[in-house]
Length: 286
Image (tube, rainbow, N blue to C red):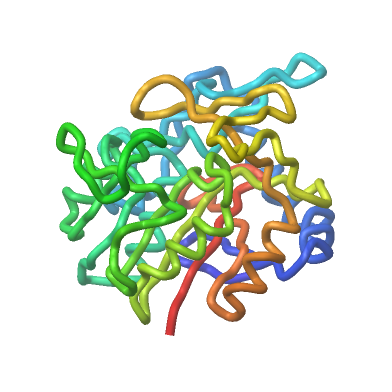
């Protein structure tokens, strides 16, 4: 286990590492620490350090994006909550900020963010990073072109030159594209040597393989193989989920980015990052 500014980071080489971790005393300690939060009336708050503004804040936890369990309980969407009242960004955004703050130390750098119309873009801009942000505005748009003041980019075929950015941040996007491996490889391509990339996504560690929910047909239309699932979209409406990603996806990433990508799980009482399934890819480049 490694620590990054108070965040516990555990790296997984393969599923067996996860199985060992899931049954470890570390997980039992984490779950015990989370009991107060799980049993609290909502909305609730816990003090923690925000990696973006760097301040001690009362992080807000609520039931938005939560779901009912088969036993009638509430399963919190812990990556979507834990919001900083000053930056107005949630836990996964604050985790990316933790990594950026650690990587850049006292400096600021050029950062590509696969979102533009969000509080996260505003918060990172406020602390001095040189930001480029984009949104996916639809399959009928041309990558790299501006529409109503917003740059459209398809993350599987970015228009930026190789090694353009000192950091790339892509949060909960790759599950919404038909070729998530192509998206990760593109993000790595535009990352400069010595840079860092943070890619988060829902990961299903108990599955052996990725579940393909839908795919793009030769005529460009979407073929649904399972009932459609949508996640929230800052542009409105919902973002269609193409894949429930699992270990075979990680194996493909490893094959293509040997030594330049890590699959990690993160947690922190100090910074209010909770839950078992907090996964991210950490990219690097020499």
